[in-house]
Length: 557
Image (cartoon, rainbow, N blue to C red):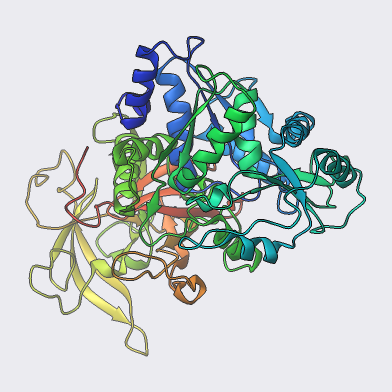
């Protein structure tokens, strides 16, 4: 069984009790119901894992259902991206892909049934007037002057709404419940509104559309969903969910049950689809899949693995109360997975040239390097007279305990020789441009001085055979407050240093034919993935995560 479905949680405890009581004899059936008005983000990943994972745990079914009841903001681009994200996370809906728009005719019929029962009415109040009449938490609402229209008049008006006789906002259909209810949701909620807007699936067939609170429970019931798992903001809506199924006489033993759980909120991270959409539309990022974005497509392009994201969702668990989760936990899960599977290679991000003055000028030798410390395999890396190391691996005036290269000092080059810095070459401005060094020819593996100890080991690449590459280093897109909360004016909190592009990186030649999406550990630098911008002429890498957790308290679960 998949790791993501093993752990018990309060939702599974509720399901277990339902099964003990003999409910849902046909099996457990969940659904993931995204609205196609943007790309999925990390918070949706938790819901995907919970809904599909719960179905797997109970050998049940999970539907993918698009809540396409608001044609103003929806698009087929978002439908396609959502499908890709769910598949990438490792889940399948088989042939159970549905749309709320599949049920528009049935939903309309249910609305007419409510009118016939005297439980819905057409209202002429404006949106602002409806808000005013609704009252407050401390003051009862006021009934609309149109609340007591006859059934015949309401049916006539509702059918004329459908026929397109009225303008947007001119009329709505409201449920008739209780304007004095302590729950504002139950104060005659709007269940249909007019929108003369083309729908991405039904075209011009409809000019009235159901509200989510109306379409959601009825779509669940039509699909014979057993447990409708929603985030906490829908807790106050559950009474309407139950009321609707009650008055429309769905069987209490088989109809869906809504259960709420805490949504995933990452510290220092935007998890509002509206705000993410604004970043894209204002071109403040390179698109929905910008690796700085917390979208699933952004995480995929960043190089995160689906296993790591599922592992993260499992580790944080399913809670009843909202809280902020530290993104370091997600990075830790990514790092653990990559450490297990990513091949090791050498890349120099900020090159400093080295010339080995006692190494033959025209000689190139192939040295053996392991691909993975536990996974086995090896490759050959070329070694020659001119090399590159990292600029930060040399200090002309080193601090204490600096175990890298310094004037007169020695280090070992990984998989190769011990070298000693003999001379520092500078340009006219005093910048270090080259180091002249000597190498110990007996210090590589198998040599007479192979076991000679030096304190530092550096990665490197041979200048003659190294491949130029571009590397993109990412930091948090947002500078949040001390608690990790994103300010309401999030545009003011954008991090101007969230992206650093290095244009003159040198990587070993084994990466010449690497494919998009391939992940590697660059020795001593972190984990990197080949970006989709890579061309035959230009390798482009994104840094996924560094080599170490950002703080020690992140532990293996």
